Length: 245
Image 1 (tube, rainbow, N blue to C red):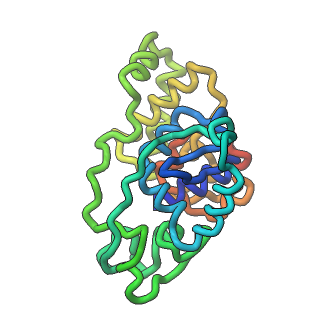
Image 2 (cartoon, rainbow, N blue to C red; image 1 turned 90 degrees about the horizontal axis):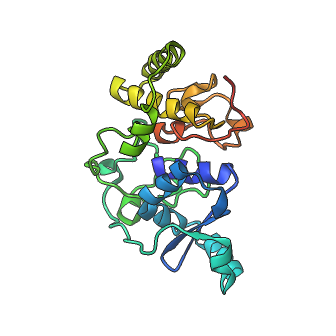
């Protein structure tokens, strides 16, 4: 679910993602933010599997033909060099992506659709599904929104004034109301404080008046094909055409 959302988001904001020779390629590389680059690198194996999933194979072949040759290095940024193909196989009922009503939460990675939508997987699909994931996922980072040590030092380099403290508290209150645990809300609020110090004009979905837990209420204006949006994407800083404060 998260990987499909990430791919959709990257395309919606104007990037092209492709797989060639076991590498993840992004165009235009010069426009990548550090946060988005880190998100792509962290999801590298899943993104490569998604781009090579059944149903996207023809499109992938056409793109590789267009970019093959010396121009490859000039127009793309190689995020990673090697791909470790995920093990596939299992029953859909044992897959992490099967939702409560029996629909697939990662239909693009599963090869069921070419764009995000709602679909019930056919019987036996899990045994050949490229997006299959057992119900015991890898342990997630304990603090996904925590700043790096250098970032935290920069955010705390000067004493916070009354206005900064009030903004921080207001943000924590809003983010916990949107479903984040208090520790994650604190971390995200501190990340946004650092953004303010850097005069960065980007925003996170968590700040948008149209955002509700897991949903974008203005997804058409935002350039998304679905209202569903993961918490990982909702915390990314971006310039969204559908943003409203």
